[in-house]
Image (cartoon, rainbow, N blue to C red; front, side, top):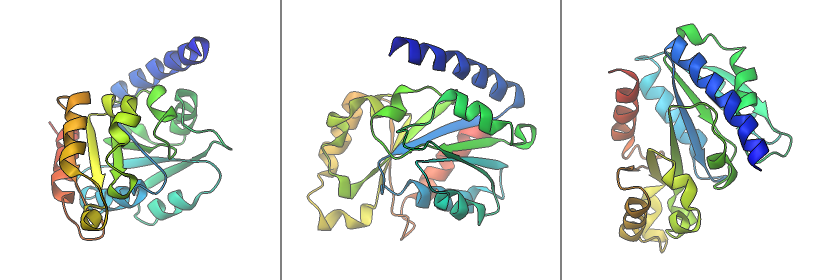
Length: 210
């Protein structure tokens, strides 16, 4: 495991240098399958694409369906299929970036493979990580999968419109998240209703435009 992560970290360092030289801010967007990562990404692009130049790398096991959805927004997108792998790694990102015009990109969003474990362990050279947690997944997830939340600069509590139809304890989740990462930013969103999206995109924009 140390050998695998060590080799990955060497490429991640090269990626980070490449991004810095190009002036690109990179977000690693993580979360479970079905948490709403791609829908959140679509809504994010609709709000920010006219303000900054964005490119997207989509990670998935086999299909290109998510990349096809992002392509319809008009944003440059590259699909990576892991053929069963549970995460993206630094060499995959390095290879994908060869097909992107980083010199004209301000924000690169990498939507990682749906998983709450493996993606958090692999540095891809990003500036920061963000995790999407759906209300329907349960409020126990931060303590059951602590690393991904410890590593994330922000967590998006998505599908907040379904709160009354679940046993999700919002205060408990907020307390657990703040205990794991005292400075983590917490956003409550509903992509279907537009709730909380402005706060999320304002925070993301401030990461790029300083």
